[in-house]
Image (cartoon, rainbow, N blue to C red; front, side):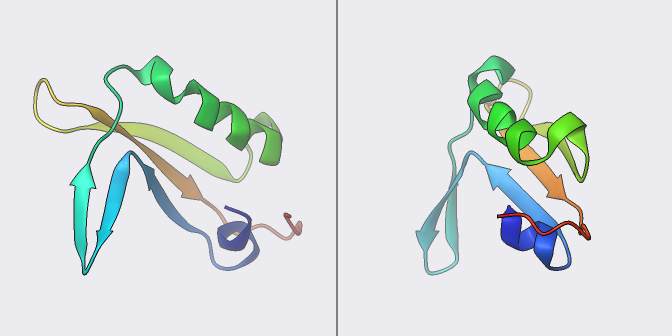
Length: 79
């Protein structure tokens, strides 16, 4: 996240496993509350929700959720 904020920004999908060779697996969360630890970590790095936005993406009508995080470029150096 720091690298995204210190560069041009970027996106992170929490709940998608990288299997290598361009293959991915959607693992996700059954309930949004299961991602609270990730959101709390974001809040520590970017207080008051500045420089990041998050949303959930659902796979199908009854599928699991992936946490989609958009990180904006910032003038503040993040470590």
